[in-house]
Length: 419
View: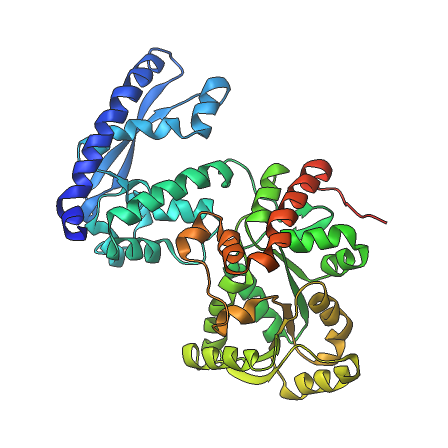
C-alpha cells in the first residue's frame, strides 16, 4: 500500500479532491475577482527537484470580508490550480522561496516530493512544537510517506487551525495568565540562556507552568509569588496555549520540560557540563542517569537522589549538590513543592541553574510512556495521560482543565487570588 501510494495513489487522490474542491471554490473566486479589491497573485516557489513554479494566491483587502477570508486561509485556495497541474500536493513540505534554500540543501530529500498546500512544519508551528528544524521535519515526512500519515496531518491541521496561533498576532516578550508571568520564548533560546548563566557563573531559577500549576497559583498566593519571582517562567502544554488565545495573547512555543530535556542534554554533552538529578522514588533518578549516559555520554551526571527526603535531611541534600559542583540541578517533586524548595535553598546549592521538572523523570526512566507525536501535535497529549492513569488524572485533566478555562474566561490576565 505504501509503495502504491508513493508512486501513484497520492497523485490520484490529489487530482480527485482538487477537482471536487475547485468545482466548489473557483466560482466563488471568479465572483470575487469581479471586485477591484481582489486579484490573483503569483508567488515564486521551489517545487519538486527544486524546480521553480508560480504558486497562485488571491490578494484580499485587509479589511472587511477580505480580512476574514485571509484569516480562514481562503486566499490560498487558488493553489488548487497548482495541485491540478501537478506542481503541488495537498500534503507535503512547505513550498519554499528561492532565497530560503542554501546551495547544499538543493538536493535535500524534501525536494523528492511535491510541496504541500498543508505542510508538517505548518502543523508544528501552529501546535507550538518547533523544537526541530523544518528540514528535519520534512525529511522525516518524506521517509515515512504514507496515506495514513497524510490523513493524520490533515486532521491535525484542522485542529491546529481552530486553536493554533494567529500568525497575524504579534507576540509580546511576556504574557500573563491569572496573574502569573510567562516568558514568551522558545526551547532553543531557553537552552541558550541556561548556557549563558553557567558560563557567567551566575544563578537562575527556572519554572514550568501548565494549567494545573496555574490553578494552584490561583488559589495559593504564596505559590504565585514563588513562580513570579523565578528568573524564567516557561509555558508548558495546550492549556497555556488555549489560555493565551482566549485572552488574545500569542505564545511562541510549547516549551515543556519533556521536550527540552533531551535537547538540553545534547547541548550539555557538547560542552562537558555537569548535571545533578533529584526527585521521584528511589531507583527512578538512577534510571534517568542511565538514559543520559547512554544517549548523551558527554554529560557528567555528578549525583542522583530520590525526592522523598525529610526536612531534617535538607542540609545534607544541599551539601551533596554543592560538593558535586553541578552546573544544572533538575528537581522532580511536583508543584508547588519543587519551586518553593529551589527558591528557599538556591543560595546553599552552589549550582548555577536549578529547574523544577515535575514528572519528567517518569518519562526518561521508562516508568511512563510518552504520547505519540501525532497526539502531541493535535494537542491531546493530556488525553493519553488520562487513559494511562484515569483515576489519578481525572481530577487534574477533566475537572482541572474545565476550572482553568472558566477562570481564564472570567479573570483573563488579572490575578485570581482567593483568600
